[in-house]
Image 1: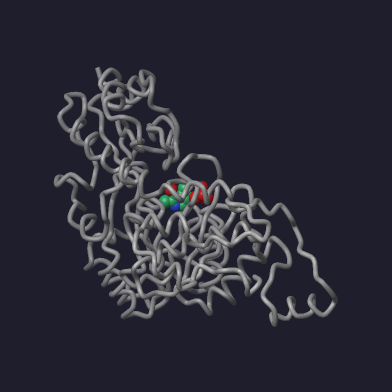
Image 2: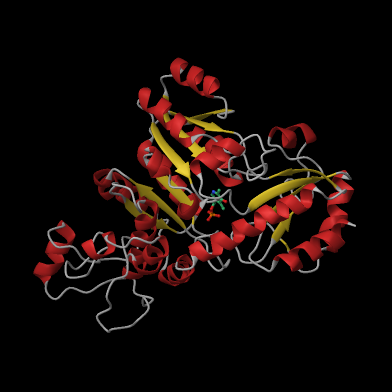
Length: 410
Ligand SMILES: *Cc1c(COP(=O)(O)O)cnc(C)c1O
């Protein structure tokens, strides 16, 4: 990048004291054409003034864009913005690399940090794609996963003590579908004793609700497809690391060669979404708590999984590491599979779909949708029962969410 362009590490941005000020301003690169909003730099390559400049750029003597799989001005703005948010208020330097999807960011992380013979320690209830990656793809590269209930520190400690091949602790918190949370701080401390690198998928929480770097995690990944974009308009992901040297070398090389780069149009949509993240998350979380309380008192509902409720087993951990308990919850209908199907069919305003992070309230019924046909015992290992409904509580007015749920539950 041209040295005359302001960067996210510019002192002016470091002095911003409010979260939304950073979300709105950080990473912005002053446009040479004076465009107010970041332009969509739809250009696969960048030109050189002369052969010598080409030589300087390729050799790294001069910063600047060369080829959009390697880097692009629109993409750089999003990378710097999200990194500024993940390090906001912390004395941590970091570097982010935007990817085509959350899965691409996770793939870069795994392949840049692990080698054959290494193992990953992780927990149940990972995002489905991550679960498949560690169980079905990485083993072909002789990278295996140890999966355990990491809410139990004794279990985590025993495994790390007895298996020196474990080189990475991979966390996702909160996680699907029962909104389980693991203790980032305690697990990271433990992993460091065994020289394990640590990574956290912060998609459900977003940097507004939770900053894993505060607890000394080495890498953060996001599916920006969800709350960061916020409007369901583009797939994307980011890998952020505290070891800037590693990010600039091994991680950058892996990202460039695997080819999971993002594109300027999707990144433009992402940048616009991030600016309102605080406003949206405040409303999402406020609504989620009200909806959880509403569901808890409904006769058709057997139980509600929301970490904002003191009845949730991970309530304490969630409150310790998160600003608010988030926008995701799940609940169990008394009438099992058929109850789930009836409920889903009756919804009027709320949207029947998978995914999360959009302004509208989304509901899915794993037993008849994402997990249809999977044997009961297998599903229950992941906390998926026949009457379980997963909900992304949107930012609509509460009265309308209540009305829709009420009529669908009766
Ligand atoms: C969606 C999601 C992913 C995968 O992200 P994509 O952008 O779909 O590739 C990873 N982790 C979590 C927690 C997710 O919700």
